[in-house]
Amino acid sequence: MITDTHTHLYSEQFDQDRDAMIQRAKDAGVQRFFIPAIDSSYTQRMFSLEENYPSDVFLMMGLHPTSVKENFKSELQHVKDWITKKSFVAIGEIGIDLYWDKTFIKEQQEAFQLQIQWAKQQNLPIVIHCRDAFDEIFEILELEKGPNLYGIFHCFTGTLAQAKKAMSYNMKLGIGGVATFKNGKIDTFLNQIPIQHIVLETDAPYLSPSPHRGKRNESSYITYVIEKLATIYKLSFNEIANITTENSKEVFGI
Image 1 (cartoon, rainbow, N blue to C red):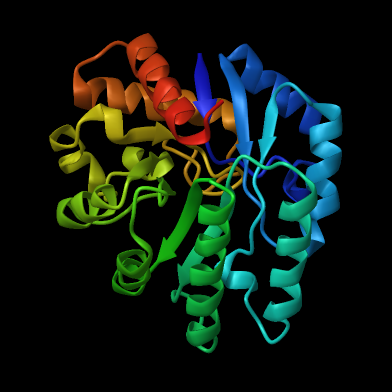
Image 2 (cartoon, rainbow, N blue to C red):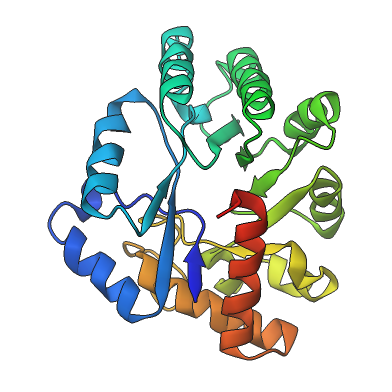
């Protein structure tokens, strides 16, 4: 059984062939799709997806750091309202992204910390989005660390030292298409990280693995990531799939 722990199946990029794309993933062995939130503009699309695939998709709720703008307080209220009246499997994706724009760094930090606190109150894992912001992310995790802080460092692209630090905060590493890139770097040290700390993801429609790099990603392409990890860990395809699915169950509780 394969689990995609991070896929935006509700994306507009799938509007023309969503059902066929999900069927391709199922045919490839993907049985569990975990769906991160972005902001209020996508909430209804997420709920529609859940209605159409009630036994396959599992929804998160949260405010993505690149959606933290002037109106971030009302966006956070939207998150708070929904997590108090509906069940979600995680708070995510949340974090800090300084790649595109540093204008709202203070607001991003505030939104990240507050949503971590909500996750802890609800006994939910967090799913972290980090881009050009490892120090800023770790600073807040250090403030919030404890037995009820846990989750996934989505699309992990850091160093071995940063991987170890992330794991010290009860985070598993979300590994996707970047592991297949020639210049992805993480493939050079993943074998030093016990596979119990790894979960699989696509981040579809983004970050398509080789040989589809630069094209639209989809959940079925997770098989390329599994093949890469099978080589790195010297395990079979099915062993990688099953171990990482068990790891995802440990995080999400389902």
